[in-house]
Image (cartoon, rainbow, N blue to C red; front, side, top):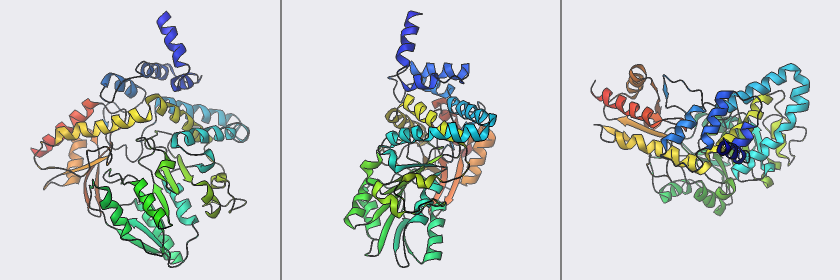
Length: 425
């Protein structure tokens, strides 16, 4: 009993202590958080610790979800926080939403900035990557003839946004077609460099290609852009809270991400980063009192929104810190390599993602030579209840596989078993 009391006193000064201090948490959530806190030094392959992490989620025990790339489930603590704040809001909406919960946005902004490695005055809270990135795409003061360099492997919403500016304003889109995977920085940088002309104004860089998990060298591309006096818009939908980095170290001008992916924040939460000295020139997507203001908050004029979701972000950050950014990144990379190293002996197995940590992490893509990927994905679900997604986009054709921190190695064993079984059909 004395050891337990000492342990709980120690926990009180950590992120676990912050979460456990919430009065609305259920007994199951408290038990899961306390269990996680007892393994402060557990490594990427310590399944005992990661089983405790799994217990902190409410994922379906009868389905193996390997499509966390679209949206990830929230831990119990985040779900219960959102439910608590939503119930509070419903007691007297205009009072609790605008006079109480609205005051909690600044602490959330501070938490996100600390995690991102930038100033809170460069962070705006919104609903997803598309909203964040389109704020910049439609807000940039570009004119007819200005050029934007982007790739055919970028996310469709971003491609469509740039095409709309092309149609509306006469800007010029310069396309790069990447043959993935690539494990050479110079190859990628040279591809972007070859498309730059005196009329280039911005590089659109997808930090991790969502189709295959390919990581692009954002820092090197920012250095390339700086040499030409141009800017970088970074689509970080799949990298923020996935593996460690600081925005300032990358040197990008603008960045957008979805917090409901790798941070496991409430559905419909996102973040926009704009370098402080560039805020004034970007027009907000939704009108603000002063569109040329240098205050990052001009991008948060959404009107009525879910304050419960916003406040839930802060709880997601604390849960993320319980695991630790570095440990989380190592575990996610470990999970990808764990199943791939087993699957490589399967006849016809083809991997379309690097196993090296500098070029990939959790998200990967594979195919079986001569077999239909849609049929394979359906087989895995119907026979093994493994949820994946088939990808057919430009020169990419394969099954996207995306585990998360709650994924157990035994789940991946069953997934590989399913691939083997399919080859025998």
